[in-house]
Image (cartoon, one colour):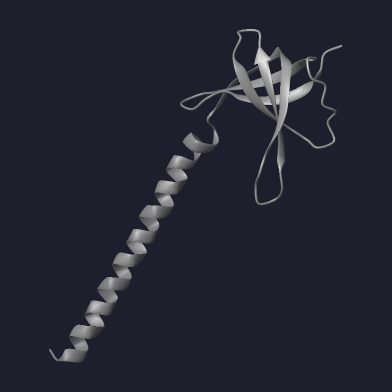
Length: 114
């Protein structure tokens, strides 16, 4: 067996192992995707009082965030669109999305309560 044969076999083994490693990574991602993406649990509506409006800087520009005090006296952050009218002290309806496995509740602005 000469040096060229050894180099050729080493290249084949390296390619074989890199293919296996790529397949393991792909299968791992497919296995973990439902747990990360489908972490959404129950959803329900709640109400709270608008306390203040603030902006969060980002690469795309400032994102508007309302601080809302819930009936449980907890203050949560809710992202809103720039076109939404800001009314301090008004009661708003929020959609609450609870995580199924881990994380914190997510709040979405659902509108003002008349």
